[in-house]
Image (cartoon, rainbow, N blue to C red):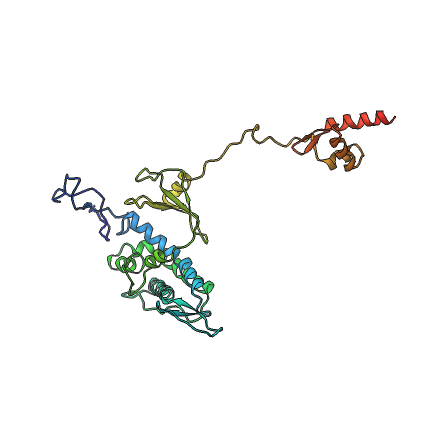
Length: 317
């Protein structure tokens, strides 16, 4: 079987072909020219495939986030032009980038969803968001498109023409002001607040403790990403039969009986103690204040309550 390499030209850092001028050198200009093998069944390497899938899964949250920042019913788009007005009812200006980015992402997602559903020679041409659409409706729209695309992702990623076009709209990052925003462009500019945490195990690729765990949103799986420069390993909790969910699971803390004693039924609340000896709670509290009873974790021992009650009865006699 002929080996297939990542169609995006990914290479292995520090590894060179014998024909490379930097072969065997440590101070050369070539960062690595040995190509990365493609994931089985697709034309992308493991890293590109998982990054593509992650951005598609995040598209709905990203569009909803952009629309919540730039509510078209309450703001006027502008393109880095300062707007001054004395009118109290003038809507606040919003950067046109927010609207352009959300529209471009929606066009990309709608085009590919229509292509997957109805076929054709190339992705369909779709319109952007309708004027005045709110963040929740935008999220629903893009999430539906994402579900359609993700179901056929392996098929799309195994066709050279389709996967290159899909990556252009999803993964490619453009420098400066993009003529058309990709999902990765918007994600790098307007990141989502996910409150990630550090993993308690090292990265399986570089063996460095630099993996960030991003909790899953909206029924999406939890993700694991290495932040080491030059590594970029990532996976989710469903990959490899759930292996990484187990690998990065938080250790279960075993608490001994000394650290967290079990509930002792002989320890009574003040109410239960009063009921036991047919006295009032005030009386039991007075016994404690007088030093006749001692508290243990806020409660009193049943045997002590009975003994004090018997003593008080004797004194009363």
